[in-house]
Image (cartoon, rainbow, N blue to C red; front, side, top):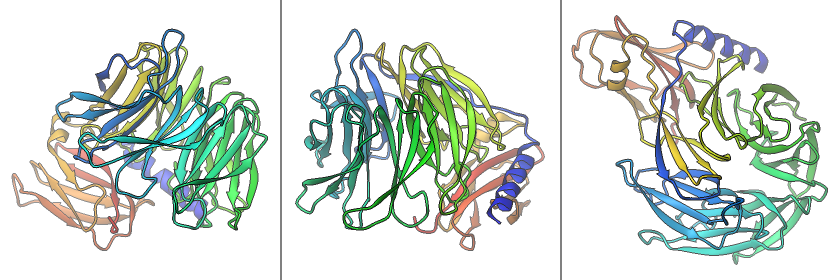
Length: 468
């Protein structure tokens, strides 16, 4: 039944958007910083909780510069940015994740350090700007290349998973009530381990761990079977991807199961691995494309057609690209920028709060950190009109508000298998005031809202979440 629903979903959305001329966003790039040498990783989040998304970056060594540690750039709201140092002592940073580790209501910054050989995190306080305090989770964890936080055991405390390239280890550190950490080695034969992700892949309610090894060319899942200590069961997804570098867990086909997105430096492969939801899980490989020296890939719906696209970076030559998904997992590559040197860092998020996913990336070679503003319009008749129409909130709880309609139109909402679950004809308000749609009766999930008028055709993905 799941396969049938997936096929219907793909066919429906392909048909729904076939009436649209194929149109990809244009991007306008803006500089956040031009002197953060060695930019290796980026994360976007509202650090100071002022309603504006900020940018956090880590730095690696380059042939001409030392690592600059970890810093964050405050979004001032007028496309200007103010740099704040988190630590200059964090050495050769390979990964940065912003997460709340100690449950105090403030964001923490988790890092892995290649030459400092450590997994560490910095806690923040309520100062403006925040004051940061370093906490070491693991030292002598040689060539630490990735670290992520999540709930691994059932004690309610956030744990940390990391990978060591040199030691060939994947480890979990369990947080204790007193703030100390207890290590458990999940895998001790994973030489060249580079990337990790945490998610529940088999739907048993426990977070599992996936790792990729560049030396072994391996993608491996470690299923969390529970217990104390936790029992782990290994499943090899693939063992022939030379240079496997990073892995991202996401429900790419939107069927309720977490899939994988991998990038491989040596072989230049970008791949999706679909989870069939069975137990044990069967994985289906969907190649995205070939990208020389691919180092990072993240999923994001860039063109707002309801499908996850892939944003990827290639380190040498430096290139930032988007791979647009047509809904049938056929991808069209568009190069966004090929002028930067040694591109690794990338993150997709709505920087300017216009409901379009923008892109943040950075150059290890020339110290640039930039963001690319997504200038997408989904109105095929008059691009200017789409900019005037706002649909909010998204995600929505009880109702949707539509503002800016200038002509009679029909508003329809389609569910994931193509059924119309709501339709309303807007005929008697020209120009209309705000229109409210009652969505109390619609289940949580992803829908497509379509506005059709004589000179207006707009389609937008919306999310219903009654537990917001």
